[in-house]
Length: 398
Image 1 (spheres, rainbow, N blue to C red):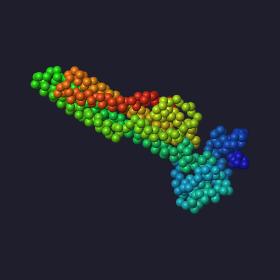
Image 2: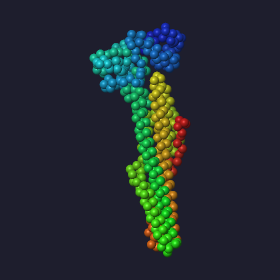
Image 3: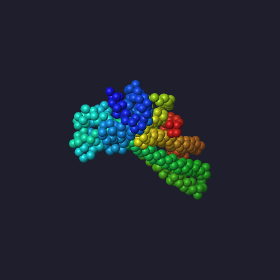
Image 4: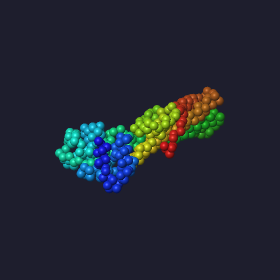
């Protein structure tokens, strides 16, 4: 019965020369055989313009038509208490509120149960019914009643913009963290220079002791070394003790995962599974290829949403890359610590072994101990990055 009604509604398309009668009959046959709406077959398989279908419905029912517009500001008061399943079954949706009148988009305004259903669910003094395509009504329902995210179109861009901002905030945070790490590495370089001067003056005092002037010069060198090493050590400890400088590897990965979790709503079930490394960040990188947007924008006004989806996927790629860069920045800082620590501990050991106990033995022990602690700290910073050694897929491969 529904297919027969649809044939009657759209037969005017033949009279207007929009579609040949033979093509129309073919579309009707496909609609019956496959259990599809005739509207869907005419739109997708026979290229009939949406506006022509709307005009045919408008002429059939003698009412004005309304076309889906993702920019439509549907008042929240009209949406209160609406059931998306009920609306999908009856194929109607409240779209406009004008003073005390509600404009209702309906695919079949002559449905005998429609008026009672509308009056029960939408409070208004008057009701203005306008015909709409069934697919347009469904888009309104999915758009404004928060259907599954992979189907939301109009207001989905707000959600996508929210996630892009969330990822941008986190990438900015990571950039600040990398800047702090760079400051720490610079402080370590200054620290190395300072301790190098201290060690050099220590050795020269023992080799060339006796000349009063030279002893003064060596003490000046040692003091200069302390003055260089002190700000370097302070600068490093600031980074080490700051709230962001002590961020652990696992914390970086977990927060990155939280900022790209929206990708779960774009999962494509039929995509081939990719063999991945066992780390959490590597799995996140592999997931990107499974979340590429492949849905086609219908109607064409939704193309901006398609582009917004693609921007979000690419933003997620950048976020993962930023997390990798931060982890590798931590590793570089760790390697700088290891270099400094090995150099200092070796120097301290040589001084202790070569010169033996003396007045400056405390300085030698301090150099050796500082180097040992720095080496251990450096390995703590470096090893997580060693585990994460994977190649992040390029965005162009998506």
